[in-house]
Figure 1: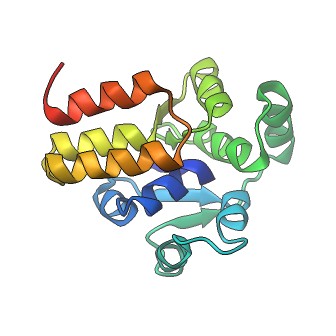
Figure 2 (figure 1 turned 60 degrees about the horizontal axis):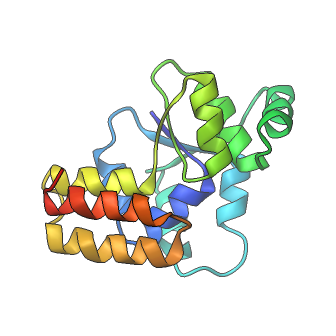
Figure 3 (figure 1 turned 90 degrees about the vertical axis):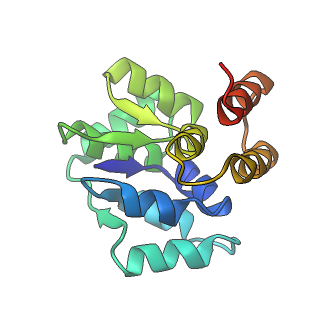
Length: 166
């Protein structure tokens, strides 16, 4: 199961890769209630995709049972409720992967020994598996660079991987 926080859910949606990714995930995709609230507030360009994914149950919305754990994660790792709830859900599952692009949530995953993926990792893997062409991958990477908070090294490493270099 892949458990999303809001950052990666929004980024993949904005580069039109969310539906393709969700369709190929074995074990399902879930978001905690706090993430649903976060991504559905306000007006965003990706809102339509997110709403349909949730309404059509391609993305399950799950209630976090351990609110004390969520509060502790928020305090210990300086993360927001959505990230903390995503981590709480993942901690309760043996095979869960956390999809996050939040720096502090990534640090928390490392400390808690939780497997994680980022939007860039999903993009690179999509090109490697032939789900999207290299040219399309480079266009999507450019968009991620403009909307995400990635360092130059991360973008350059991803560009090399997409182009087939080492």
